[in-house]
Image 1 (cartoon, helix red, strand yellow):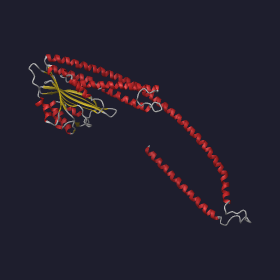
Image 2 (cartoon, one colour):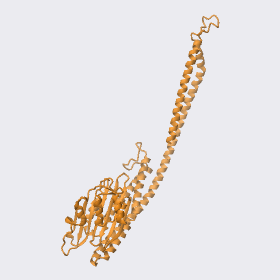
Image 3 (cartoon, helix red, strand yellow):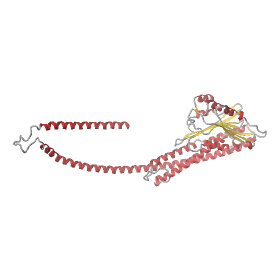
Image 4 (spheres, helix red, strand yellow):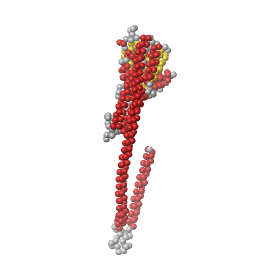
Length: 458
């Protein structure tokens, strides 16, 4: 079933190209013959097939009779996978034929293709039996996106042949952060551990140690951030170069809140890594390897492997304790983080109260100003009611339609053309009133449209 699922899944994948190298590390009973070679290789050439089948230029070396192979590592490496889609689901980083051939020749776990969409940290191992031989298959994978948008992904697929004592594998990593990729550091360290290469968990163990170092470094930075923010919020003074103060030397609570959220994400990342039980899984895989190795080895080989096995188990126990310490520190940091959030909430509530009080004072001033303006307008209105009627009557009597000086009778005072005044005054007044009415109706219509748009936005 694994073969069928593997072929169907690969057929649905897309292929991209990455820079590839082939790495060979061999440890011999005569340490002077130990070798470490790495060279570029194109998966689409015949040289790639020669490397997988150990022929032509990659054939086993001719050794003296008294020299034996203690262990080896043969691996396809894509150290700096730069393609942005390389770690997306259903994506492989070499040609389809080369990818299938690599899994078949190296006896790699074909279940690995099904984990392309997995996020977070994943470690899996199992025994694969084939005729009179067996293989310890392992998958070690991590896919994370950092807070600043960078990615940190790697994949290590291994298969240890108990008959030849050689571990074959494929590894790749993608990191667009400014720091050096973790896989590069692990490969550098692995090349220096030639005498211990016979243990198949040596490479995953070295790589997990760098992950642990990274987690502890992030936790330490998080604690420093939290201490700075505590001094910023409680003591109201700038303690670092971080932009947690405004131009008027007041604490920028929004910036502090964003930093606290970033701290919480870091802590949750550390806890999620620690609680995956990676050290325990490594210990189980190491015990399974040693038990299977002892069933098919001589006493001399068992003695040497027992020493290496104890060293690996001791290192795994040390990592387990470090992870436990990281979890304890993370829980303490989370508790301090909750305290800081409570303090921050209190400060924000106080600031809101001060702002509301300031707004109430400003509104009171505006109300007093409006009252004074209203009193002034009322006085002007009263004066208008007193003087405007008299002024209007006086203006009418001062026209040529009235003649109080030369008229002999009261009928002669008023001109017979006085109707012209009303004929002009009444239409003009009606025109002005109509124009004003239309302007008011249009303005009210605009206000209603704005009100409906506001309701739709809400």
